[in-house]
Amino acid sequence: MSTDFRHMMSRRRFVLAATGVAAATLVHPATPRASAVDERRIRIAPGHASFTSPGDPLTPVWAYDGTVPGPMLRLRQGRPVHITVENGLDEETTVHWHGIRLQNAMDGVPGLTQQPIKPGTVFVYEFTPPDAGTFWYHPHANSLVQLGRGLAGALIVEETEPVAVDRDLLWLLQDWRLADDGQMAPGFGSAMDAAMSGRVGNVVTINGTAPADQSVRAGEHVRLRLANASLARIMSLRFEGHRPGRRRDRRPAL
Ligand SMILES: [Cu+2]
Image (tube, rainbow, N blue to C red; front, side, top):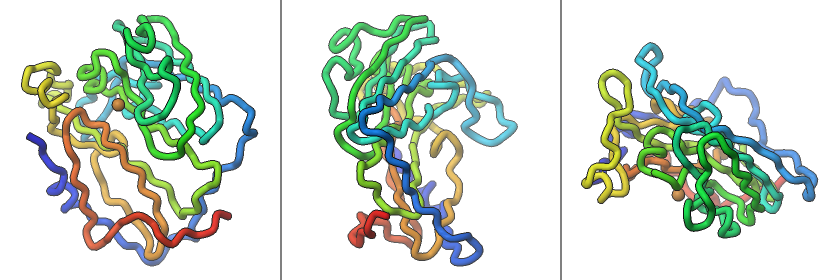
C-alpha cells in the first residue's frame, strides 16, 4: 500500500514573497572545454545523518562522501566523465546511474555488467551523458539495504545550451523507517517489503532534511527538479495556491 505525501504537502505552503528579495540571479553555468574529461571521485562509507530536528539522535547511515543524500553530481551533456568510486563498506557494491543512456559495462549491475566493487577497492565509471536532465545514482547490489541505509544521490546533466531560469532547485525526496532512538529500523527484506520493491518509511525528507517552506517571488521562473529516491513510497505533491507546470514561454538563453 502506498502512502501519499498530500497531507504533508498541504501543511507546506509555497510562500509568495513579493518584496524584499534582491534581483534574480540567472543560472548560467560556464561552458567547459568540450574535450576535457570531467574527473570525479566518490567514497562510500558508513557515517551519520540527522533526518529530523537538530538535537535528535543521529542516525547511522551508509553515505556517498559522508552525506545523505550523496553529493549532487552536475555533469555536462556530451562531456565525458570519469567517476572513481571507492568502496569503504564491508560489503560489495556498485553504482547505477539511473536513467542515463550509457555503455552496458558502465550500468552498474553486479554479476551482469561488471564485477562488484569489493570492499577496499575502486572502480572507475566512464561515460558521456547524451541527454540533459535530472537523474540519480544508487547501488545495484543488496539494493534494499544499501539504498535504505542512505546510498542515493542526484545527478544533473546540464544542457549544452543553458536554460535561462531565475533559480534551479532540486528536491530529492526520500523516506526512512526510523526507530524511536533514531536508528534505522531493522528488517529491510521482509517478504511484504520485498513484494513492494522496498519498504515504506515513517520519516520523509527533502534533500536529507525535514520538509520546510520554500519561498518564491511573484513572477520568478523556478526550475524545480524532482527525484523520488524512496524505496517504495509514491509521492503526491501539492503546491497550495500555485499551478506549477511545464514552461511554455521560453526566454531566450542569455
Ligand atoms: Cu535506479
